[in-house]
Image (cartoon, rainbow, N blue to C red; front, side):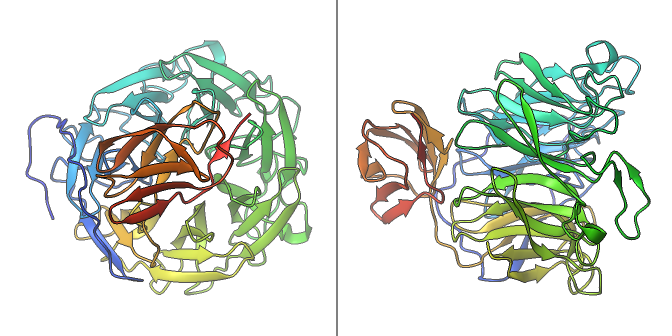
Length: 493
């Protein structure tokens, strides 16, 4: 499917999704193939996020009205709209993480490069934080490396997370105030654009606290954030099999308070042969059991990466080691926990054609390859998400009809559900409920406690946490049945 060429940037709102489209079970289908000769964009590098209008939003690295990438919206049916075309570069758009929708309804994201600042360190800019409305109005909130020596950070590679206090938190891969070099930061930024640098990595020689964070943060129920760094750690060097020695360690898992106190929980490659993994990728996901799950891109039994679990106190368990032989998945990115309690992700290598896979792994470590990419249906997958119709959606950087990437869908038989944004809050806090076919909703309850609500659209309900609510599932009763939240809603003191 191709988009007609247009001579200017499109800013068209996406229509609400009124019906659920069921994908064939266990069959990966290509919803859209990108075409570099049109304004739709080419080569998506980040995953997707479902917004309150029911559409899935993502980005491309190239193509668009200025051939420098786009932000697009696509319905579960596969109807794609170009929401924004990035201006001419260099550098072009380099969104490497999915967008996030904040409580105000706008989408927020980071660019690795560009932003118009950067002093003499980055040609064209050292990255930026921006917000964009669902209809396509983009505002740059902060340009990195706008301070001397890039003390505010540079080159953000991870996405953002909105915390319970309403601010957004993220990381930069480089920059910071360390006297040993530019090894990255943790920052907070208000929805209006006031940035605060909370922590600069590599405060000691050898970077025992980690260096180069590239994944998104995850907030725990105690309010602290958990994340990973690509390098650094107590080991001091990184010797995985077949990989040249890398300075500053094999990566860490850390926790940081909202005020900026950082604790290193685990340093990778602490076991012989890096059996525990090395070079974590994709950040962490907080699961319903309270632990955090993630992946590494190296180390493990075959030096092709691992899936691991780590407790909030820092006890790490290697659940699965990827392999590099023909057909084996390897090079895994981030994970997410689906409504069935299992974790789903993509590997950019391995599978039947060696072009990547979609896989499922249980909390106990049993991995199943659900489908393999073959070029025609995409290759080098980039991210995976579950929409409220129960199906999985993602993007591939390459492959498809024109070999410039795809949007794909995969049904694994999971039922429709509702999602709360955010999934925690105090009594009286405003909450957004995202779902499918919510028209005519009869009731909303938090773990059995009724709540007042307002149906804004077929995919969007506004409510507040009711007095007496306790932690548990949110339920929305509609004429078609009752939908439950995929994860328990956490009622905070």
